[in-house]
Amino acid sequence: MTIHHIRCPRSSTALSRLRIGGIDTDLCEDCGGLWLDRLELARFQHPESVFGDALVAHLNQFPPTLIDHSIRLTCPRHPDMVLLRRKFSPAVPIEIDECPECGGIWLDSDELAQIRR
Image 1 (cartoon, rainbow, N blue to C red):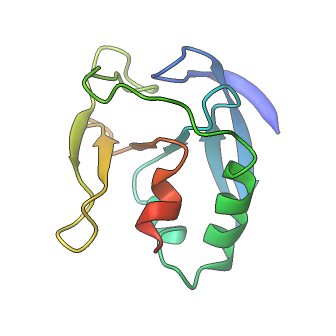
Image 2 (cartoon, rainbow, N blue to C red; image 1 turned 120 degrees about the vertical axis):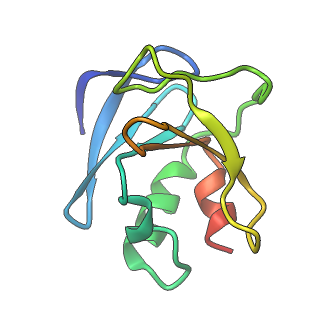
């Protein structure tokens, strides 16, 4: 993993780059949150995805943290843009944070595992 310039919207820690299945994901080693650029979530969200299995296994090493979901987050790529909190889908009522400008998705440490159930 390599550290680069974008920061966690929860802790302001520099995100680490983790390459899985040919996709560079951005991971917070402080809170276990995950930044996925536009359309990258599709590669990991389905329960039969081996890349999703690998990513969830990696995220499981981070202990769950108590998160205040009432705090509005800003986009790691566009710090002036507030992320929209929305339901992932009608069938999967997990709330995720999405940037209205770039379409990137912020997932808290356990949200990918919940989406994939």
